[in-house]
Amino acid sequence: MSGVKDYKNELAAANREQLEYHVKEILRLIGEDVDREGLLDTPARVVRMYEEIFSGYSVDPRDVLGVTFDENHEELVIIKDIVYYSQCEHHMAPFYGKVHMGYIPSGKIAGLSKFARLVDAVTKKLQVQERITSELADILDEVLKPHGVMVVVEGEHLCMCSRGVKKYGSRTCTSAVRGMFRTDAALRSEFLSLIKE
Image: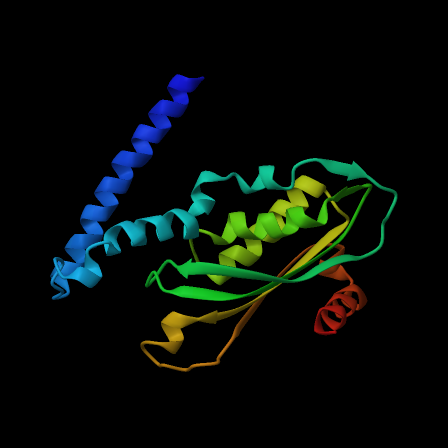
């Protein structure tokens, strides 16, 4: 087992070296003096940041919900205001916001902290908000097998604020519905009213 771990550590070290080299090259190509004091450790810092903000690539989000519990509760459960940070796959610029998830259990529930971990697993990679929303709904539907799922994601995209149209403060909202939420307008309305409270 330690041989596998050693190999993974060597692979990670090799990837780190290559990434640092390429970050240094980007700095050079945009016109920076890569040997000036303020930039000497920048490639290593950027790589450490990448390991954190792109940690979703090393996780199977379906495994994150972990152990489920048998519970005879078939009413709406909402986990709201889960803050996320992601990176736009079009410009590699940050976007961030809140996720709200609701589901109607069909005999299985998950621990509440698992929902926050699921959001991290899905958002900590190059993404688009629409895909985040659908992936979260699909994973909840697949793993928990509830009667219904609804996910709403709010986001502020720096690729829209700091470049291009430069519309600071504009937000994007996306939603995905599965099961009962597709056909039950009252249920959708209940969910939407509760996440606004």
